Image (cartoon, rainbow, N blue to C red; front, side):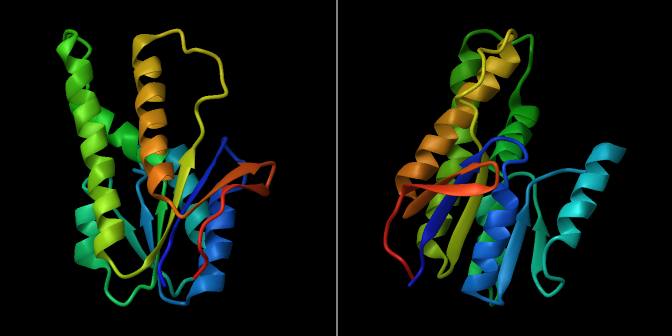
Length: 188
């Protein structure tokens, strides 16, 4: 039986570590979907650190957008798919579509682009015969950002997280490395 798990929490809360541990227990056949881009030296180091933390036998798919379609193309024999992370995926979509000089209609276009990307991923959950472990950042517990772009990002990531949580069989909130079950569904 397949299931979808959403792991959400703040930066350095243990989200990725928990996702890796759940996947290790579930199957040796894992596809790790990395949405980060190595755009600077510090990010390259972070990516390398993440790679070292997971088994070398796992396959890795590095993709910044169109994640659901790429998973369908690359699933192979994987029984578990980790998507790490939605926060970067939303950032990638915004990077492709955001233009500071656009007017009010831009918000609707950006929301459509983000919800389309997340909808495509949710459709992939339904079509692919594998369990999914999805990692995302919680953005709703901080202060209201001072600038328009950051508020827009927070709002769109919050919407993406809600869409995923509604579809997930289980949701964990990570706090200081401790998983708190927020939604407990069926087990596989």
